[in-house]
Image (cartoon, helix red, strand yellow):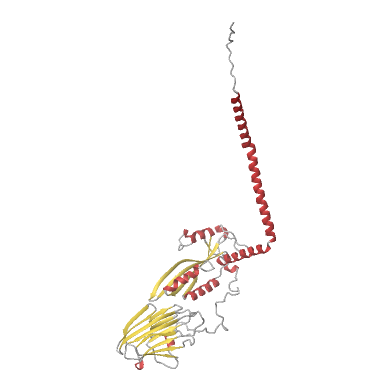
Length: 414
């Protein structure tokens, strides 16, 4: 009545699980297909599309530029202007005549008296070494290293490039011209003088400056400069002296042998100029005023005829001078000053004909930029009259001006 079990069992997968497994498999296959086949092609298409857009934009810009001749001409002009500025800073050739003219112009603008200019032997140096040096990588005061060579050495000896046939240098090395300038000045004028080199269109490197006090109010200095150019020899190119406008700041004379205005013979004691042709009375004090263009001291103030007593100023501007004197013919006690410098003495003065004299030798102004002048304060506490004699002053714009006057003081202009 009962059916016997055969001992075998069967297990059927539920339909829900089967469908879930199939869906996961399909999703995995779709992910793999997208990752390895579809996405790379989509990225490539996107990159190609962006490149196409960029190329089209470049094409449109090139087409627009091809028709914008005015804009291209303007860019060319700007580039040529920039090239001109760089060539001015670092020229193909550097001439000692040009350097001398520049030093003369700077000394005039800053009221510096140049005593000497010494040109050193030209040197060659690799551009990289020069950049390192001016950037502070080497001591500016040391001598050139093995990377430099004196002028005349062959390029094969140093590994530097040779010269072109027309004289231009390939850029393998720079030519450096050292210049040593000896000058005299007041301290206040030295800063503006050095600043002219720092702001000059021509690249001029200040290596070092040495200052020494000569006397009260006067410093003596030694300035070492370095100028760079692309050509190792200035003789290959010589445009400097023949360039139009090279001598715009240099006065032109009808004859080479004509004396310029205010000329004074060398080694002549300036105090002899205080004596007029129509008189032979020596003054007790003297003041000499010179034009701003003079390469000598602009204002000298001392006890006649002793040059060692001078107070000096080289400022192209009006400055204050003072004289205070007391005592009698046996011994005078006087204090005189120029700007911030002062001296005092106790001694006998000539006081000829019972009169103290201050003689001022002036000169005509040479232009609107000539501002040399003094404002003189005088205090006469003696029993003798004091006479101020002003000779050859500018009529329209005098250099001498009366300041505070006390005591018996008179002014005579001739």
